Structure formats: C-alpha cells, structure tokens
Image (cartoon, rainbow, N blue to C red; front, side, top):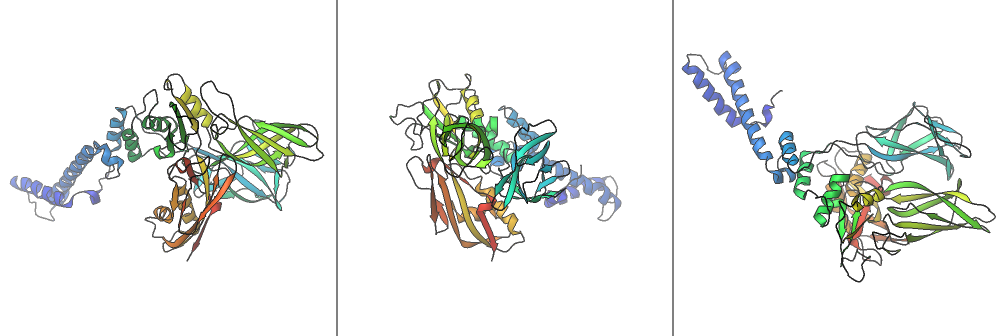
Amino acid sequence: MAINTDILDAEQMTRAEEVFAALLADEGLDCTPGTAVRELVARPAAVLMAHLEAYKRSLLASLDLAAVAAGEIEGDDGVIDALASTFRVFRRSGTASRGSVILRLASDAMTYVGPSYRFYAGDHPLLFSPTHVGVADMTGLADSADAAYVPIRPRGDEWYMVVPVTCPSGESFAAGTKVQFTGGVGNVLGVSVYSPVTGGGKTETNRDLARRVLYGVAPGVLSTPLQLRGGFGDEFGIPPHRVAVFGTGSPAQRRDPEGKGGVVDVAVAPSGDCAVGHLLFEAVGTGGDYVGTLADAAGVCEITAVYAGDSPVKDFQVEWKAAPSELHAATDGGARYTSLQTAVITFSLPGASGPFSCEAVVRRVPDIATMQTWLDSSDRRAPGQDTLVRAPAPCFLSLSATVTGGELPEESVRERIVRHLNDLPVGRGRVSAQDLADALQGTGTSLVYPVMFSGRLVLPSGSRMISSPDGSLAVPSLPGVDPAEVVFYASAEGVRVSRA
C-alpha cells in the first residue's frame, strides 16, 4: 500500500533520516544528500518509520471513542470495529432506499415502463422491477411475474402514473426531486420523485459507529429513553435524534391524563421526507352516501386524496378511531399516528349505487406497525409499562431562499437544504435561516437574509398554517399537538431557491 507522505510529520521524518544516515555513515557508506544511499535507503527508511509512528498514534487514538464520535479524529476501521464488537455493536452495511416516482403523461394511452427505461436522481440510479404498465382502466387486470399494472389518472390537462423504485446506494431523495430518464420517451413528459426515497443507508462511518456505542447498547428489555433510542437505532437504523420519548407528565403524552404512570409514547421518524402511500379499502352506501374504514392506518399522518374506483372523490371527511388492544390503553385521540388508529372515511357520489373498491393516498411514517410488534415481544416489553410507537406530528415546510457566491447550481443548493431540514431532530420546535446556512457550509455559497418560512402543521384533526416573517418558524403549543412531538419535513417542491 502506498504511503501518503502529506499526512506524516515532516520534522519527525527529517530527524529519522539524519539518524539512519549517521548509522550508515558509521559503516563507511557515503550518506551525504543526493547520494544513492541517502535517497534510496536512508530516506525511505525514515518515511517508513514516520508512517509506523503515525499508525501507532492512530491506533492509540482510536481507543478514544469519544474523540472519534466527536469527529476530532478519524480512527482506524479495524480498531473501531474491534472495540464496538466488545459492546456487541457492529458496523452497519449499506442498504437500498425505497420510494416511488411519478411519470407525467401526455395522454391516458397505455404506457409501458420496461427494460429500456433508466431513471437517475443525480448520479444515482433508481431501479424498478418488473415492467410496469400504466392503464386507464384496471378492470379485469392482474399482476404477473413479468408485468405490474398501475392506474393512469388525470391531473389538470395531463395524466400521471406512479412506479415504485429502489436506490441501491441508499441515498435519500425528497418528494419533487427531478429525475432524469432515458429510453423510450413516448407518452412520458417528465419524471420526479413522488413518495420520498428513504429508508436506506450507507455503510456506517467510524464516527457514526462510535456514536452508537457511546449512546448506549440497548438491553433485551427496553424501559428508559436511552435504552429505547438505542434499541430503535440497533434494530431499525433510526438515529437517536429522530426518536423522542414521552412519559407521564409530558404535554405530548395524552394517553395518561390522570397521571397514573407506566404509559410511554415513542415518536419515531426515519431521516428523510414523509412517505406517500396508497391504501385500499371498501366503501358501501345508499343514496349516494358512502362510508368505508381504513383498517391499516398505522403511522398515517393525513389522507390527501381518495379514489372511488378510478374516479377522484372531491369532498371526503375523515374520523380517526382507536382499535381495541389488550396491551395498550388508547382513546381515539391517544391512538393518533400509532398502529392502533383506524380511519372512517365518508363521502358522497350522487347517483351512484353499489359498493366501491377505493384507494386512499396518505402521508405516513412507514413500518410503525412492524416497530410496535417488535417492541411488544415478550422478551423486550418492560413489565408493567405500556409503550406505544407512533409517528411524530408533521409540519410540512415551504420557504423561499436567495443565495449568492459559490458554484453550486440552484438544484444542488435546494437538495442540500432539503436533506438538512429532513434530518432535524424530532421535537426541535423551531427552524431558522441558520439551518439553511448550516446546510450550505463549506460550499462557498452564502445565504441572503431574510428567509421567508411557512409551514402546514398537521393536527390530530385537520391542519393549521403557521408562518413568520423574521427568518425563523416556531411551532406553537396547540390543542392536541405539543412542539416536542413535531418533526419538520421539506420537499423539493416546497423549497424555492434563486440567485441574487
């Protein structure tokens, strides 16, 4: 392996070279500068000695996990792995992220998205399988191993279809991120990210691994906030700052209003934008008035659209309910954002008759039900403690920022800002222009003040717009939502960037 002399101590190399030259001179060899012995023996030996000394210092420094976790030193991979293994913590390998892309179409003609298509978000490929076929009428069609059928739906003067994708590199991309595509263009006008591409991860760095070790290794039974954060990190790869724990007495804990104790809520949000999902349900009714129950509503924050068959429902109402549970106490309000919540959806279709197969378009934190099942296992549940996993209350951000300097194109600036905002801690409660400046640090691009923020805060029932003209946005305390349980989300469509 080549030795990088740029990182070695020059003074130490010089001293070592003089020592080797003196030793060789004692043997009668000419070691004056410029001679073959000096250049080909003494100097390489000095470099090797300095390299070994630097390596020794690196090994010793790697024993200081606090310094590695703080970013003060890089640490040696092998040493960090060995130290972490003594705590039964192991480096995570990279995993693919998942989401979907939306294809804008010129018409509702049947559209094939097959092997000739290639999707790219930046330099990262977005893969899909099998061939996806967009059709205007799904009647009588069934997926096969070779083809999956998806509906083509109208949007203004255009149509669209949605294709699920994976990103092997594990990168995250927010909703609205532009996607380049190659292959048979045909009916396709453009492509962008629909449901955020999230849930993946790169191979863990020394710093992240050391942080996990220092944060605490979760025991089998999880009862304290530290143990819960460590457990969700070990099992699901969710960083500690995206896990918030609320016990009795917290304004964000509404399942124990009498303060009896033993009730804990865990708000969990993987880094990245809030996912978009499509959930099926059946609706029945008479006289054009329909009602249906969305039984699988785990982690759903809001329902943004409803389709009866292939037709969009213009007006619908949602009532959130709590499913009965033997393990957890929850009212309708206390079950909100959890795996216990269900949604009763009502709407009117004048002149219609008979039942409808319906689809709800939702914003949700995925895998809440899986996390709850994992936490409820008999070898992990704390005796006498009712711990319920839920999504945080979301605040969807919109902002306009002007930048100057640097060479980053506006799209790259937007991507950096979105990525940074989607990784702020749960319960942060405030977002400001400083967060945008932090996202651009080291790029040579500067922020022009002020920055205008607004946000749509999703409440247990309905939503509320909040705004601020002073370059920051704070979440107020409202009935049903406390700032400590709110997470910020940003999409490429909601962040406008221009250059001065």
